[in-house]
Length: 580
Image (tube, rainbow, N blue to C red; front, side):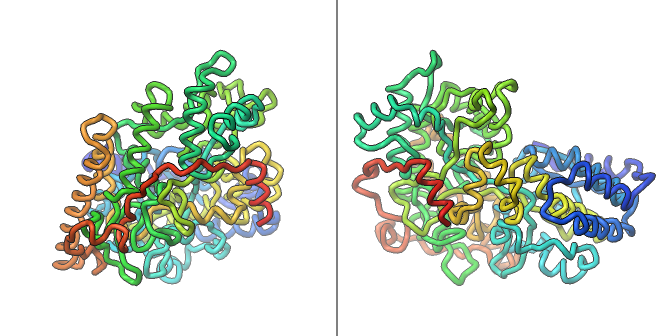
């Protein structure tokens, strides 16, 4: 990761670079880009040109300026960095250095700018997981007030915030918008439909487990399918196959693997959307009507070390050891998901749709999960849930990488960056960008005819995002008071499970205790200086765990954590989605 000094140095160098002096900027360039690149679009040709004309005029005061923005490295942001910055400069005359780094480095840069009040970047595409942080610290710009106030002259009239499917994820407890979604993807279930459709496999699976081989509805079925392909099938066309894929490298990615709703998928949280109340997917308690987190430990009414959370971690570790390919335990996020393209894994319970683009690449590019015609032999489906899950809980994670402005950025640079942020999510651009990166942010985009035409080649992505089920996949919410401070605790503790140094219970006990310690420091700072705007933690006094377990706190341990497996035929699932 970059440290603060190197971040400052990079920013200083960028500031000293020669200011861009575009020879041309205006409607001729806009027309060229609209016709050659920004197709398809949900706008008519006339409305698209009208929208682009607004950018030309709004950017006049900032022509020749050079700004710096930062995002993580995924295909959508690569497209922005390589193509959309060029288009924006040619149309507006504003040069954008759109830097790409790993997610951990982005979080560190955001945290450094917040801590030092120094302008490292003029805007960030920062996960909406930090909504609880931004709404409390008030260091990020409140976009609702910005668009109506100082930023009104540079706010796109056709932005149409209500069209963004992730708007609820970037809204604080005060009802204000703090971030604007730029890309969005869910973690869903992924499976080899061609293998599941094999008549011999279906017969053998039913004979052994007593129910049909299909999309697993619960974790019991997922485990049975993992065992079946790893232990019973063993090989397909001479290739050793496995029933599960995941990752376990001791790195920050491992923490996000768990905070990204893994505990709630098992059923550890409370009912409620977009996040559980009073207990969210991190196991942090916050009462309805309150903005003050009350604790993560079971003894404080939280659920981070409760039976459901411990079960979730145990299953992650067990499945990784028993059913995943050798070496998976040493993979990180970026290594594990593309590994599916090798074609030797039957299913993955925790698969990000951001990787759809690479998973539909042709065979000639080494993708062994498409047929000779380029059609995917796999499908995505809803995530199965653990035995503690109840209807009304969230069912998985949805990443909403969102534009975030900071008050520490000078207003003129902030305005120029806001113009670029809106440009790359505008209706003139967003549909084409959605087809490139397959990280859809607008409801109008996913319902466009171009996605209807492309749906058969995308393995269920279009059907999922058009379905009412999509609301059950949500990012980290407002219960988490300071994401950067708390998130770093997860990977180290979970890593101790994978290494064998701690049992799942020991690791989660330690994690919950450390979270409470950090939140205790936040509480003292908030009481003394209103660091968190009065919405910092107010920890409950500790009680015996028995006073909370199953009595309004963490769920009590189930006598049977492996009920009978349940599956649904994929075609029936699609019919259900289509009916809605």
